[in-house]
Image (cartoon, rainbow, N blue to C red):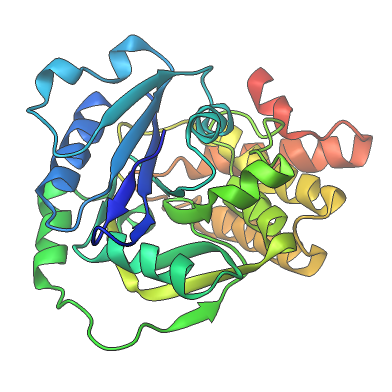
Length: 305
């Protein structure tokens, strides 16, 4: 799937296709699509990847100002994103957004500009004006209020090297993905913690990964109920170890992240945040450390927890 974004009869610009993997949050993805449709500078097309027919109801949406394709996929972030990769043409720029990430007007053009200006860029990611993942989460109304207060940046964008794209908003040059047969690693199941780092570092083999100051948005960090902490706690240990062994995450960076999360979980267990299952995360951390010692550790073990 791809379209061409024409600026004149003489020249055309690459299409920017938004890809959203969503599961079990039909109201959230519905409201995010409405926000995308309200932008003056919207995407050329949108591809949704769902795991169940109940994940999205197209009849609840008005006519969209862009083509909308809905694909069914096995459940799991990596599987669902791979389904999108297979359906987006190599001459497109694919912008992966979380189903609760709201982009500011100008984000799409800034994305297109970055890939046109510098052929060495293989991935871009934007600035997060507010991130609800760090707290109890935000509503769409909260996110829209943050965007309304933000002034549109002017002048030349700053594009700085970054280790990885932030999974809630990262754009990729699809020609590189197709030419090299790249995909998200389905060894990281379910929510696939650190899948953005893994994919970014694979892409970084072929070019630059940059953060663009003109690409801005709000991550709602929506909580759809208190999630079980044990699987995430396990992933906080197992996934960095997996990426070290795979060679897509520097050992020092991975171990620092792993132990920072373990210490944070331990420190906050006595007075946990209402939206975080800290005791569960601690239990998951220690189950993974035990598996590391016994040689059983693997990201897929969360399917048994």
